[in-house]
Image 1: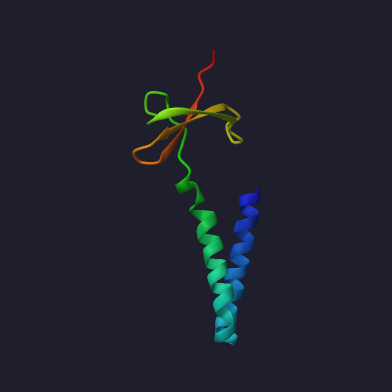
Image 2 (image 1 turned 30 degrees about the vertical axis):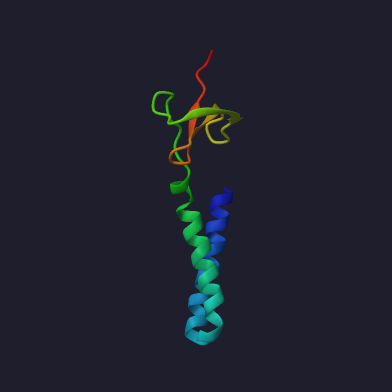
Length: 95
């Protein structure tokens, strides 16, 4: 829901930048840049965050961090690979 609202807001800013580009090109640059960055960041944000891994596929060692994933509502443990600085998120198996 929030992601959709941010995307609509970003597209409105981008659209106003396009309209300003037609009317007053010098004033359009901030709206085009901000609207474009906000749109790009909202659309491609999920690329940055990794899906949950299985314990076998997780790289590195457990950090001791645990949290409840807000989407799946599952308990997740964080693994850290010092060689690549990559963090892996692993669903904790039910006991």
